[in-house]
View 1: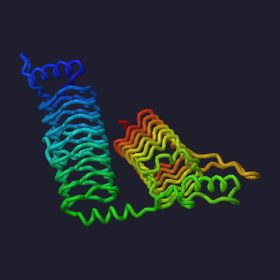
View 2 (view 1 turned 90 degrees about the vertical axis):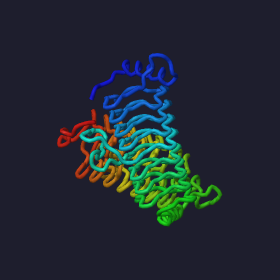
View 3 (view 1 turned 30 degrees about the horizontal axis):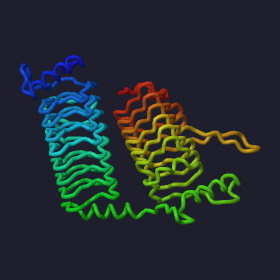
View 4 (view 1 turned 180 degrees about the horizontal axis):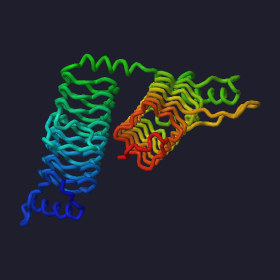
Length: 421
């Protein structure tokens, strides 16, 4: 592919604007089969431009106008597309993996199948030339307008669609496995043969949905049946529960009661990170989407819990157990999952390691995270950003690092040959 520089792009944007306004010297932008990775399109008007089969890996497309533009079979891996207008744009066969589409407008956009023969991208992770499915895997599409989109067979697996408007969308045969559809409005959408395994459908609007509506309703009923906290209740008031837990910790179990949040839905408890949460039990607990920045959860049992889409920068999770927990798309940069020193009177000092076996960190920001000596057997780091992370001494048997960014990460000797993104 021909590499386009930022200076060259700036000139093309100016000439294309002249074309749109009918000014002399204007020419429609045709950027087919170009390498546009990392370039800045902010605030540009690229309506009706042609980007077919180009690479826009990591490009900045924010607050721009791409109405009617063609992104046919493009690589938009990790592109920033926030707050832009993509009305009636053509994304057939495009790979929009791990990208940010927050508050963008995709009304009437085309996400159907399509592919360019003999074109492939190592970074895209797509099966181009085979299925031609458009892919949004791992992307953040929060509060975005997808009204009337054609998304048959589109892959939204592991994507965050919280608060998205999907009125009258055609999602027939689409893959929504492990997608976050919290408060998503699916009014009037077609969902025949849609894959929903592991999808979150809390407060999802299913009005007028056709297709597998019974499966959706059953899934929603199951998820909304979890226990919740109650500020007015003595036994389900988080302040009282934490107070009893603190007494239990201070008295070595003689007074108070250990905090047990197993099976609770805490996804609306954004202030929970302010409480001391060390040595708690919270098995199969829902923390989805919470602000947990700087949270302290050392030496706790949090197996099978859901931390997807959480902001937990700098969180202290030392020596805790997160077996089969979900962290997909979360910001865990600078988080600490290392071992914790345990000193008991009259006994030799020991170290308790964190257990993250079987946990899923796909599409997570783990830059600078500390996994030293952790149990990472079977842990999934697909497309995770592990730049500068410390994995020394960790047990990584069976762990998945497909498309993970391991640049400057500290690794065990047997993983030193892993290619960073």
